[in-house]
Length: 305
Image 1 (cartoon, rainbow, N blue to C red):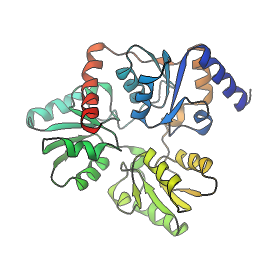
Image 2: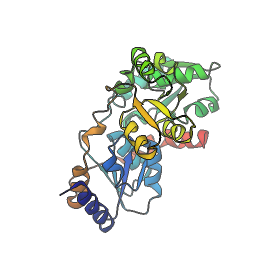
Image 3: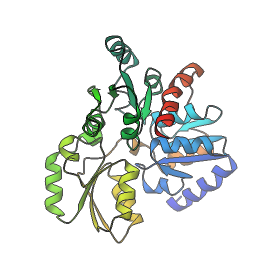
């Protein structure tokens, strides 16, 4: 079976089996092409909640599928690969936050959406990389603990000097691989290119950027910009996706090491086996956990719109 033949079968079968396919931006382009929706983690979960299908397949990592289940408890949610986790989402335990709360009872705990359902249950509000600044500024409390990504938290802290923001040691190992040496090497090789980076990168990287934003923000900036060349400081699949969408422009990896191995676990064949045979893992969640995890997400909507 060729890629095109497998894609056609997936498109046919998903309609028969009432499946909505959600694909994170870091997945490969052959999977993008069979998606109902492509985007970032929270945007996809919102799409899942409004999609008419009774079944949802999340082509991404575990916390994304969990967020879909939190917002769509009545739907059957599949994870595209059972081993597709997120090291950042799994770095902190709820007990660690509970202990911190005892020491700092007057602090608001802000959790990046890239966290497990269990961790969300002990947090006050969630944020995305695109909504974090607005939400943190809208929190009445001046004392904030931001988890788990220290680099994103540092960037927010710089933008919100009136807030007392505490950070823990955590972050995205993929973005943390990017260094100032990578920036120098890439800029020396592509002197006319703009540097676009994700705020999960280290400060030494994002301080040299021409644009800092979410994955969706980076892609939108590159597509709308009058510039013709860009160095991309996020997961390297975005280079391919942008090159496909903007063939008249040129896109370069900041580093060949910026690859999320968990995202790359999902293959087109995995998607095929799930829609045809129902082989994927179904996300299960206790209702008490779901309701507690939904509270910080609801608060995110209240503060961020």
